[in-house]
Length: 111
Image (cartoon, rainbow, N blue to C red):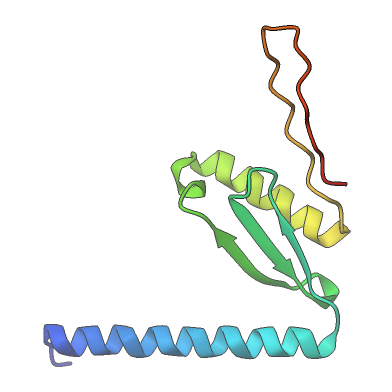
């Protein structure tokens, strides 16, 4: 097998990326065609999971912030987010931060 030059390698990588994007689009169409797609996001917003009919995981999206956590912590967040997507549960709300002062704080929660 002949070695590829840098421009050839770059073009090969671009072709592979186009193929991946095309397959993602095909998968998204297939999931949409067969039924409802459920999406869940982790409480901290770092992980989003899309699940199609039959529990088929369509996509897992990570933010740059997610990559800053340890592998075990990230695995736990991904697993919990997948479970929420499969069960349709909403993400738990983070605990409010307590202040040292006695003044009331106006807070609005989305329900």
